[in-house]
Amino acid sequence: MSNQVSINKNLPNLKILERVFLGRDTEVLFIQHESGFEVSICIQTLQKPYYCNQLFKHFTEKKEAKAFFDEVKMMKEQKEVEEGRF
Image 1 (cartoon, rainbow, N blue to C red):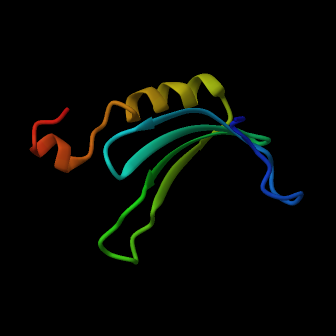
Image 2: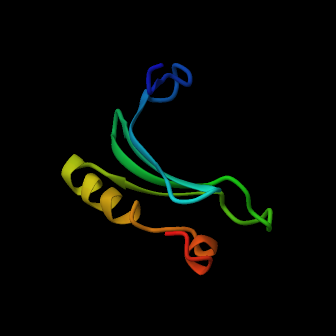
């Protein structure tokens, strides 16, 4: 199965370079697309519907994006840290 995702002809092709689960409900993605790179934190379940379920930062340089991704992927969900599962 390919990580290449073509959403439609109006949106750029996306390629998931790396994906890490930070816990049960949260994952961080390192993504490449036509205009650069993104590091996205995706939260699957939220208690309050008005919170954003995806936080991201855009980069033009792959090296800078990868360094940020490597820092973010070391994070853990708060609940897992409190329960000592890290």
